[in-house]
Image (cartoon, helix red, strand yellow):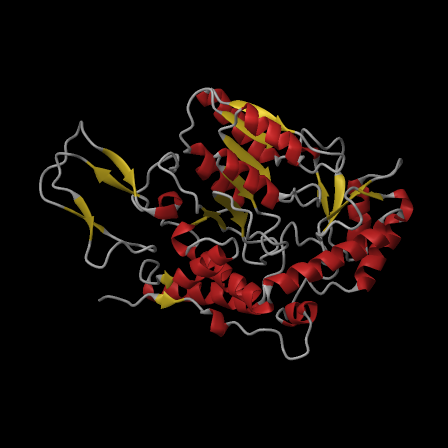
Length: 427
């Protein structure tokens, strides 16, 4: 018996804000339950009721039909996610996290020995570790991209590095440890003019600030932060896929076995399905000695068919909800929340905001005064039913000198919640 794929919700299925409702009010109304005093969207945001229902519904279908019988149609989800960066649905691969997506992207990128890879000292800790390991393994050279006093990448400095020779540029649009928005549009334009591939980490920016127009060849992101999807799913979007880009290890779902001794490999009638396609083998016997795995077209080469599929379905709903709210309206709302938070928190109890007060992001980091620490402030906040996070130095080992307190209000955060936090800082 053949079961029809389960259709993911389409954009028309996702209700927009009620007439007269603002973005914050609509976002809150979509969640019947949320942690009290939640100020940690940059860590793990609160999924909506519809996202929760989609995850549970798919798990129920897996139990009723069998895991491989409950196949969701994620085509609309891919299209909606790709649209947030100006890409196509075939450019989207789902993985289990942003870290896994970055490892899949860089780990299989065929850069030759002596390749020069540019990144800033503010880069995310796990990406730095990955780049250092790959550099040691393949003979790459890591080149530091200069930043200004606000830790923003300096376009003139990047231009000079590109003129001196770079083979790849890797940038976090917004860091985990500081809410500065990097000039990704300008970085992308400079890289394109130089013919250098540009990788943009959007884990802290997609759903938070505008990403379209940056022109990156690859985007790495995650579900659980500003898109407010489930944990356990990330994504890789590769509009600039080249023959040098492949997964670090071939999989049956993302590659086919090419052997001259075979009559050939071809998709079954109807073409390759992006979600569980089967490839048919022609006549002939495969040689033990010959042949090599060949990646399938598009980003599917990076994707494993075995995954938390229910979480992927939930992410699809979260992205459609983001579209329904209006990305530009969400971005403006979050920027205003960030400005309000910085104005209220800067100087409270001697704490200082790390980024400019008018930075257009809602990721706010605070530097402790003498005699206090981020850990103690977070504990006091928890006693007051306020959820904030501590960013350890390992998140940005070349930039952070001590842990900082991170405050990242989700849409609809009341000003009263931010004011309550100022009281906890004044110990």
